[in-house]
Image (cartoon, rainbow, N blue to C red; front, side):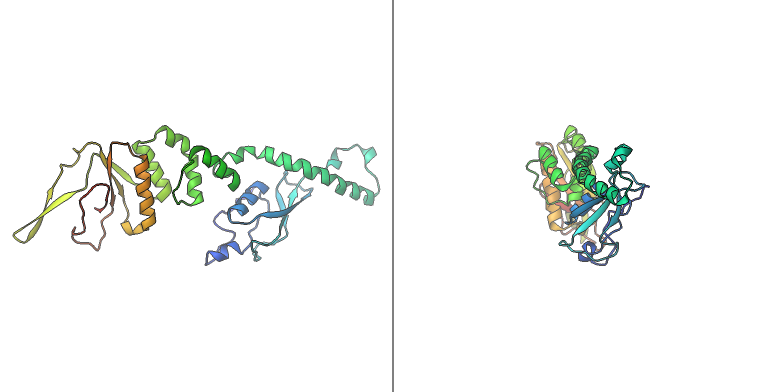
Length: 285
């Protein structure tokens, strides 16, 4: 049985704190997906119990904290997983006809199956450890350090996972227009437009009480420069986010190039008095 699991939150709630206090329904979800999700939100499974069922191995068939119940980081989460008892592989001579003795043998063999399952579980899901979108936190941080030892940007973990997933393409096309566009789109969730050989600077003159615009540098003719245009208002980003954007462009751009960051013109602004001329500055269209 397949079941889609909602990664948006344990359960929808009005506040961020409540997102971590309502238990989700993990029934029919594979244990790797459930445990990885709980780890991402600061929770962990305390104990697992195996039980024979119609499901494939390592599928959750029961949970001690029912869906909708409140939980905390100190709550003991116990999952019951589907599994196969080794007694099924024994010949009939080892199986007692007495149900009481038979039950004891089953419970005794589960001890050894627990040990084997911990190893089998990791082997069966080994490929998921190397998938940035599914890797457990501790393993993901280790893999990320392979590619970016000095990555000091303040970025949400989900964006880091998307960033790492594209790392081979980004490293192969580093310092190119496509690479920089993809990085900024992952980090900001807004796809920017990179305009090469373009500087959005103008000179203003007042003649007969009329403000006229005169281009300082002829557009589309300036070499070794480019403009990164975001089709959103500058207020869409916080100051720290803009600083992060600036740091990313500075580290990813060709060494001998200059850049400018341009945002969508604010509707409330009717003049360009705030336009500042300079290098590597934030401008309004």
